[in-house]
Length: 318
Image (cartoon, rainbow, N blue to C red):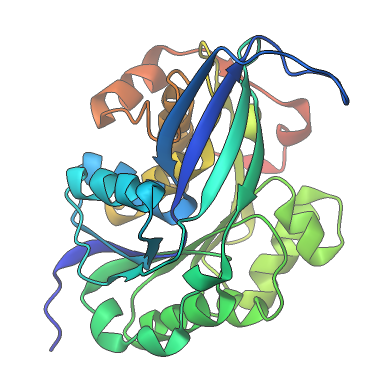
């Protein structure tokens, strides 16, 4: 019998960002000075795991990191978060994934230019049962589809629930979705995957086709929408003083995994995840504002919400 050592194991991306702060994003062809330049670690799965670690969960990261300065910054951040890094592969002579993120300080919105070298690709044969089966839950993203598909299959074989963060359509990703229990896609993903523009119909189609427990999507400042069983749950976003939206989705996913592992209802999971994502937006960087559970609950109790008319109505339950 496998001994459970970790609450959450993650397989997927990390990145080291360069934040460029500008007073206002220029028009195409424009030229503006930037006010600050900051190196900041991030990445979808890595930041979700950091979030869970800060909330008190035992975490392990499986991924590839370059051996350059950006890679060293990433490793230092993950070590500081206290997660297990035994299955991280350091790629010699390979630069780490990087992104240049231009932050419009008038709104907090960001524009991202990113690059991931091929030398960071995960080999699916390196994803073994021994690396996955000692977890209570698995969290993955959409990159390196053969590797994350193998991780998801192993988890399914061992009765481990799988959560996925996905924003684009990847070849062969249906093999991943077949093993997913909790899908939380980007605002665009359900329509991109199904060709159905109505988000309610798109989520319903995905959930029914793949038999997942929850099919959900984030809605930026307007919160998140989820389908569980045959009912939809909509949780509006929170109004905060937004400094930087970088990493908000990653923190949302980490908070969602935390909520699932704590046995929260869908409504409570969405509320908590929205609050954690919103609070992260009040600081610079993908992991700059990861809050405590108490801070998130305080925002839930006292904060203002940003409702979206398209996601309220009789077909929404709480």
